[in-house]
Length: 319
Image 1 (cartoon, rainbow, N blue to C red):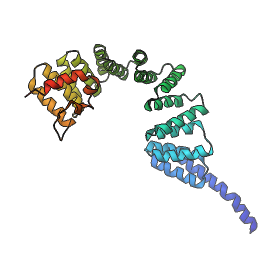
Image 2 (image 1 turned 90 degrees about the vertical axis):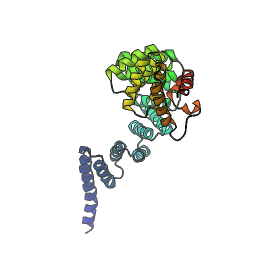
Image 3 (image 1 turned 180 degrees about the horizontal axis):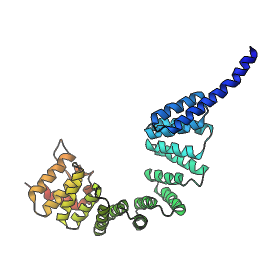
Image 4 (image 1 turned 120 degrees about the vertical axis):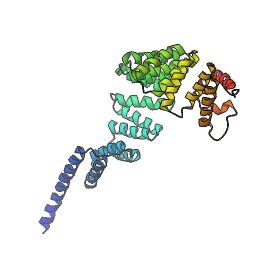
């Protein structure tokens, strides 16, 4: 009898191990995330220290949007056997719930464990940009570009960092490099918006026009080109662009304000008043606009204050 008991003690773990492997293989074949999680949970129940099961269950949870659940699984691995991939993936999950400080710590740890892990360094730079740690972000983006100098997206993000540091010359150079590497709609759009920000309206108009040629479904490109046309005195072209932007977004109060100003510039008082009222109804639906301060969140207030202030004074006089 004792011999049989001893034999069973040896056999049970082997059976358990085989069953766990079978379920693990089944989990790896399914594309149904809920099923994958359920199967991997079975594996973990059979083998509580199966870190691969925790890792792949964490990935499935993350892909399903259960970021906190993924963080718990990744943390289990980090306690037992910390590695760069797990820190990086936990950083991604933390980033998804806007835990930028936690994400930064994980990306830094991943890169410390593997200095060839360029994706970790890139993600570290991105989260530093989000945290407004511009000098450090700049260093990290530059380090990424030393290894991968053909990445247009990295040039765009480094350009945004330079812009935040008010180093507009280097920002423009990086936006232009991005256009050279990938002359697509996004690259032209990003440079066009930047040029608008530094009041190079004519040059911005050229880039935004090119962006629209390559992608006719970017409502923001129509708005910004409309703004450039308005500021260049091309009022009829501005009207066309703002109307197009509104086709994509019927509550775009910035586009309605642009329309109101443009119509007023061509002496179409009726349409100027109509669009001014539409903008005001979106901005302050329950009260009349009595001060320019109520436009604080508009593009015009934030970037073209004096032009906008003068235009508002003209619009409020319309009857």
